[in-house]
Length: 473
Image: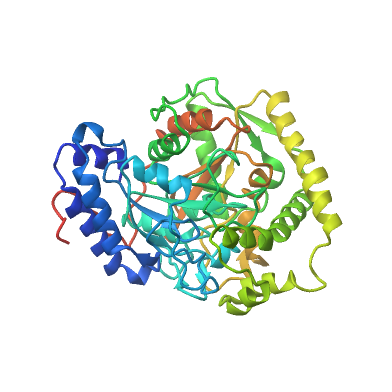
């Protein structure tokens, strides 16, 4: 499904906007087994559609009538913000986050809020408060996280696109496991106000969609500028292949599909340069975790203060329903919390060091992007929250799925992932690209060109398509 095509059909009057929105609400209500939504905004979305319809055709924004799902840690006025938890109580923000305000001004209609890993602290979206979100390609498997509900809804064709957030891979991991496109902007390009964040240093809001062009369109609306993206010239394009770390210990179907796609790129004239980014993965992971953990409660407190709500860390921990999240949060209130000195080291020494390593790799090798498998393995089974099998060994679920996308997220790079097919179980496989900081537009141009080489993805087993002929479904 391409949101550009949908927008064009609405402009031409082929699909009445209110009918389209009602259709998407009905699809959401019929799709509770997917666990993608925490809240379906029926009345809110219909009123938004009515308001949008009254706008003169000549003044309608580029997203006129685009149905969106929004991760439930991002404020949408008139809908609850829960952060995937009951710990925030019945919290209805009075104003939109800046991201949602810009999208609505451009004509988008938010039809509901998306399930997530509670407080975004995980990658499975096995949510103890709202139930697990499920993968549309196999309901027994995770959709990834923490923006799992957003990716599941887009992959299931409940909506053409959605908005999520990312600390250490929370946009690209679920997009990869659900067979759609996930785009992480350079940290700081998208506004972060009105969002229940983990880390003000690491977090960014971003889009998940069916195509690169749809992500580029949403990016242009939020950040300004031209929405059109001309594909890069593939012949002579230099892309780095960071074999050390990123391509190690891959599940066989991931390795086979990813290496086959490298050959496709070579055949198209792309120059693939083997590089070493030069980072210590364990040190990078440790620094990223220390920063995220020690910024978590201050960020929650700052969010609640903006909404004139009290902050009580112990009460929040007590109300958390997901055992893994409760354990993480509880550890921050006791003697096992990282010391402030470790935070200062991670923030002011380690992170700048990793940023320099990445910058030097791009510059010295004269490459425009790095390419690697988005995740080392396909979607795990729901319930594999602590460990998962990879090549016959039990490995930590969180650290394994974040391994490849975590480092670029820590240093704030833009990144994108695209589906490259499915394995024999029908689970999606994905390839990712990281680019230098603030080279978002160039990354989108490169991804647009690469997307033209991708095979078409099969439809998931669980989906609710919409078009001009099934609006009553």
